[in-house]
Image 1 (cartoon, helix red, strand yellow):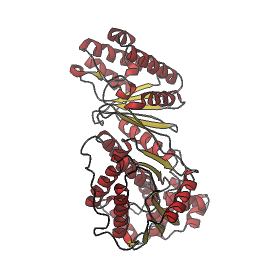
Image 2 (cartoon, helix red, strand yellow):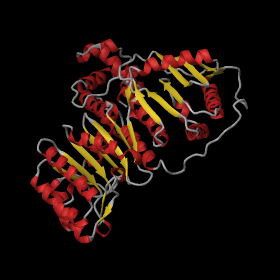
Image 3 (cartoon, helix red, strand yellow):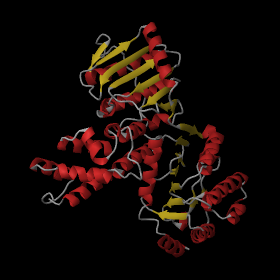
Image 4 (cartoon, helix red, strand yellow):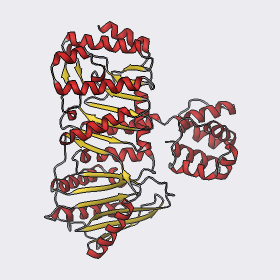
Length: 482
């Protein structure tokens, strides 16, 4: 992540915010936000090259060269050429796609596998090995306090809406596999009893940490019982807070400075007045938050379709990843043969959106090289029409239509990549939003327009496209299939 790399360089070279800001002609506050991860690296930034050149001039000592050579995984001696050093640092600072792409890949894997290996709800005596009065200390204490909190909720007969917020460092939740399984099992148990959750995510933390947190929550998001939000404004990150509240039952709170949570105090409350005051605290924060994502399942097909076509209508470049062929490029003659009114209506809407987009913006489909013995149209069943198998003749007609579109429209592109995730369709428009939808049961879809998450998905799709979208080569491969 850029912020971590920048921090590393500034620490090893003993450079202060004001020194770097003066060297590259930006405000010191801008450097501070970059270091804290509160500001993403702009796509068309101009300051990283002079930044890299400045750091190259500050690397003067042998121990600095040794540490950097190890960090950058360089072989041989560190170069004495400042220009070459600057290029090495620039390439390293701007290369964050692999890390972010891995985080997005985890979200996709969690999303497509959310129906498998669901943990069984686990109920234990909330007092067993957990009661330490109401004060709990450090990571172990936080875990015990949270399990006690969820156990208390599970004992309630009437369901309620839990209120969750944490801007503290969250590795305590996932770094211990046994605790992670127990925490997830308790949470599933809580949801199975009819409880709901409102959760406020922290988006100004490290982007990859946010993406990993979302990946962990995906299986329970799919239940439809969780409303995720985010606070959109920048915070300085000095003081961190956690609020876990069950308004009818209990609460757990903690505070820390920056990311220092070891040995910090976590407090469990079951006093009704204290819980009521903390609930008002959460509600005041929620008023300034925005939805992080919208979640759809098979019962909300109309809502999904409306939002999906709103995304397709929005202005901007578009990329769509799917393992099968798309409905938008299916020839009208093949749709007519199928005599399916629902499919026909969807096809008309998709082709109209495609035509509108191609007039002004690039539109890229990222596909696996189709196997004509089992060609199929990838249609999210949440549309109200399941994926459709094609005959050999219909598949050939479809491929011919894709070739025709490639030749006719400069803005239409196809990337053929055999290493795509299965059973999912991902659509993104740069700077607008993104959607993921499953093509197998249980059907669900997620949509989000938070800037950092949208950019992360866009970068992931760009990575999947790069090296696979040479139009002449794609046409030749498709003609070979026909």
